[in-house]
Amino acid sequence: MIRRPVDTGDPDRLYTVTGGRSRVDDDIFDLVTLIVSECAPTPGMQSEQVKILGMCRHPTAVVEISAELKLPVTVVRILLGDLLATNRITARHPRTVDAASALLDSVLLKEVLNGLRNL
Image 1 (tube, helix red, strand yellow):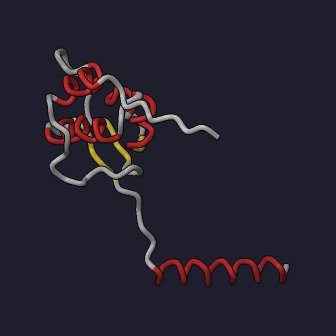
Image 2 (image 1 turned 120 degrees about the vertical axis):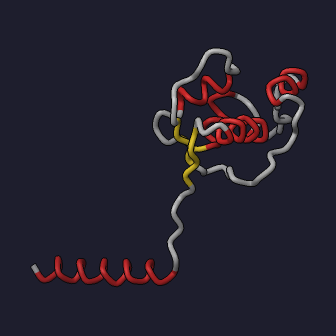
């Protein structure tokens, strides 16, 4: 299998889209962070940000936004950071399950299974 290099887009375009920035200040957005629009686009917004607000009417993962816009995740994270700073989006991180609650769920499921077998 021949591996081709990943196309990260035209460097000039990416520079313009991000305003020359190459990093996000915080690591708020990982690949599975869900993004939700909090407002409609306003006149004068970047076309990429308008697309993000349109896509994120329902929770959408950062990786999905990147794929849909055909932009590297790094660039999408910069755009999302700008939208978050202006309260146009919210970021929802997936819930993590701690070991104790996972164990309780396991015990509960076993009890349900035993109850069903007894029927």
